Image 1 (spheres, rainbow, N blue to C red):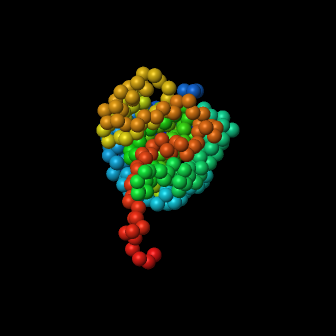
Image 2: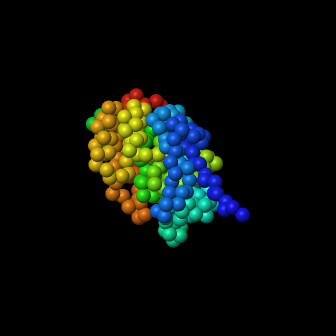
Image 3: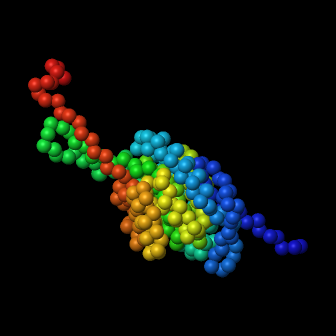
Length: 295
């Protein structure tokens, strides 16, 4: 009997709550260190970036307008679903050269990290807000508000943990995102998109692309409808490119290139604060002479 040929799964991209094939029609075969073919993976294009950003922009109003407690519930729900699919993620991590022990540790950390940020959704405002002293008869408040659409180049040496670690604080703070997953280890990123798609996350809040950072980073950096760029690698030329192009519409830029995502360094409410804008509001204080009778 002839040896059976394995049918490789085609890992599609995730835009606006749907799984289209890349507009470019291109793909690459992801392989492990042994040279074994693991899957067919989309090579995203500039058009895919535009579509993903448009989807993220359309979702900003609804997601940022959600109650913080509701965002917390949704992040916790994603953690629950990861827990239920542990075996699949561990299998994919092992296929991508992790040891079984490291794979189990990575899925555990990813689940715990989602729960960590679920707990911060309705608390970071209290930490980063302020009542400011002013020399006039006004109340003066400073409060964090989401910056909008965040473009993320995820850590390339992690398939799942790095992806979760950069997405979770962004959406916990009410932002939406477009994420470029690891080129070398893309399997868990698309499986994570399948988890998101069957959770309570509205379409467009998280958009996940696969492909080459060398091709797509420049489109992230100069897109005029992206408010913040998060880059998790340490390529000096790419950093310079991002900084130069981000200046065109005064994007915020963050380089998370020295973070050890496996430790407590990889989680902090300050990651939420990075993609927040501080809004200051003045409100007049009614003077005693003009106060109405009664309370």
